[in-house]
Image 1: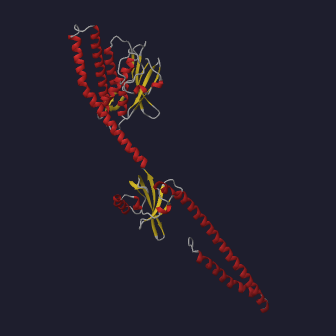
Image 2 (image 1 turned 180 degrees about the vertical axis):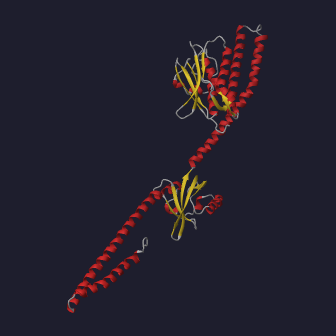
Image 3 (image 1 turned 60 degrees about the vertical axis):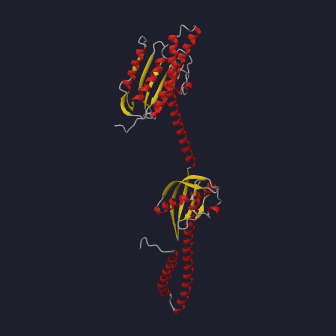
Length: 436
């Protein structure tokens, strides 16, 4: 019957039995048919017996040889499986062990686990998996084992204890193993200690950053009152006591007033800078081209005699916070306006394009003073200026505001520049698909 299989202990005797029956049935008839008399029949019978012994021995040899070949093949397969297991278990750089499902005793452990937990293989095999947990965590672990018995499971993060009592944070992957008379589980451990430490350090850094922003906002706001007093009293001195002071005294009063104005402007900039990330973003669909045009119209009102070629790409729509986007436009255009003052045939261009990553990139390009590309990162730092000339006014915080505003939208900003040939500022804003 096709597909019918017999065990080795049954198959060999069966073949030999069938051969023997067939031999008896046909060899005797053949011998008597060929023998001319009884004396010859006896000789033929002896020869037949010898032939039977030879053929039977050969058949048994061939059957055993075939079984031996199958055995060798099976042993090779077992060895291959063992090598694969060693590669998976013994040589795995990830900590692994096998434990008994009933007793929870650890039956086997790989070198990586011994290295991580600090136990020798012998010490490890004397432990239960509960010995690697804090006592208060054992009930939660037992609940996981009870709820998930027969499938691959993932749990964690858990806190495990090393031999020296030090804690490590891990994720556990478990898979049940089934063998004759024994139910066990293969465990693989992913060490999350460094990841956990990084997250903890990040939380601390975020808290310190928030505290710093809060302090900066509060300090800037609270300093406005004494600065207003300085400006007020210096203005009174300049107007009502100028005749009582000599020229040098009036000069000092002027310097005090100018210093107060500078400090007041710096505090305003600090309030803007710290306030950007404190204010929640309100996303809406806006026409960036209109914002840019309004900003440029305002700049032209400040210096109506100035001649400048300005081009803008029409209908640049984006989804962003309108107020924060206006800050980006104001500061980038003010920067371009400022550094093209001494440029003949000054030109400012605003546009956008799509890069290879399918990001929408916006740019503000000018042909003004420019700067060395090595200063490209420095110019985005607060109160940093690459041009030291007093001819160019400002506190050096406008581009810091731009970066803070762009990063608040999960975007990025960068610049390409060359001395005497102007600069081009690029930025992207993360578009919010949730907007409708």
